[in-house]
Structures are given as C-alpha cells and as structure tokens.
Image (cartoon, rainbow, N blue to C red; front, side):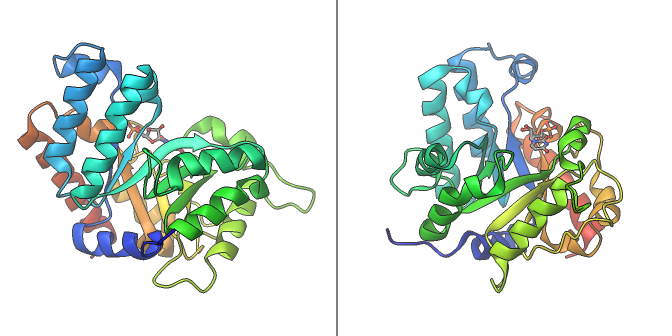
Length: 280
Ligand SMILES: O=c1ccn([C@@H]2O[C@H](COP(=O)(O)O)[C@@H](O)[C@H]2O)c(=O)[nH]1
C-alpha cells in the first residue's frame, strides 16, 4: 500500500487554505422535497450532484451521511461512491459518516470498506463508534495509519441522549467520554502538525472545560445550524482546542438549495461566521 500524506497533515493544510468548515451531505427526504425532487434514486442523484458541483472546489471537508444513501440500496451506494470520488478529485476531504463499530474481527472488514485505497468507498476518514470498547477499533486505527487516512471517534456527541453513556463514570471517576479523548491523545502523541485520530464532540454541549480536549488531533463538531448551535458558540465550547475544530453544518447549508449560487452563499456565510468566531 503506498500511503498518502497522513490525514492529520492533509486536514491541517485544507483548513489553512479553504477554512475549517465541513459541509454535511445529508439527503433527507424533506430536503429532497423542498428542492422539488422526488424521494427516489433520481432525486438522490440530482441532489448529490448539485452539492458536489456547487461546493466541491470551495469547502475543505465534506461529510456524507451514509444512511441517507444506504436507504436506496445498491443504487444509493453507487451515488455515494461517485460523490466521494468527485469530491476528492475537486480537492475536498471526505469524512464518511457511517459510525461503524463492532468486534475487532468485523471492525477489520469495516475498515477495509472505507479506509483501504482499493475500496470503492475509500474516504479520507471514517466516523467510528467505540462503544464495543476502544480497543475493538484497533484494526481501523492500524489500517488508517497504513493508508494515510483518519478516524473520528464518537466521544461526546451532539445529541442530548449521548450523555447517558458518554458522561457515565467508571470506577475511577473518569467519564467514558474523557476516556475516549485520552485514548485519542495517546494515538496522536508526537504527530505534527496534528494527528489523524479525531474525536466527535458536539458544538451543542456548552462549556466543556471539565474535559481535556487537547488530543493533538481534529475535533469534528456537529450541531451547528439545525441542532441549534452557532459558530459564535465555538470558542466557549472548545476553549483553546478551537484551533483544531472542524465545525460541521449539514441541513443549515443544504436547505439553501437547489440553486447552486445560494448553496455557495450559505456555505460562505457559515465559513465567515466561523472565521470571525475562531480567527484565522
Ligand atoms: O454527535 C453527532 C455525530 C454525528 N452527527 C451527524 O452530523 C450531521 C448533523 O446534521 P445537521 O443537519 O447539521 O444537524 C448528521 O449527519 C448527524 O448524523 C451529529 O449530528 N451529531
């Protein structure tokens, strides 16, 4: 396998040149309807192509939500494959939001599906769930290292229900979320300009100063727009770690479509607000 430059380095470069915004590609049935499209494979194709053509050369990071493609079966997955290839060809980085997680032997197959350069869905990074135990992710951690791709591990998710699991305390008093952040800090130790193993930390969570977010890796921050957080919240939520935050907006941008210019304006507006809030 000939490795690319590590994901962390490629991401830092993309954030420095295009800004840190991540636009989610979430073809909800309600969005297809508001774009005047049918909730079928043709609608999915048109929606996805429009987003790719409008934003592919302007935004640093894209996060397709696999579920919205998988619900159309193999033809939906084919649309996703094309989008991944086209976004990468346009210079965007693709974080596949598939939230995979299983026992190690199965996790190895999930890793092959998204992080092996020969895979049809080869992406720059993959979201993974550590709730079968962090070490169950080891095959994905190893393959990501080999292929120069990255991971985003669910640590403190943007939804209120996440607290039930992620803020639960272990016998030593440490929360599960903090434990995941600690694992990632160890994976990223010594990496420059930053490591390739990121955490998902919701922008909706308010003050997180009780957590050590200094993992020397990226923090993918969903929750801006439709879930109520704003770019102005980022410094308060992330403190000094805001420098490594990749803020995600999905519906907040997509609802501006189907006009390509309006999509570009919406993404540019969020990007400006992020720049004003975090500097750079
Ligand atoms: O903690 C998490 C992890 C992932 N997500 C995903 O991000 C987008 C958010 O979409 P919006 O339309 O901007 O609300 C979506 O794909 C979620 O599955 C998250 O929201 N929170």
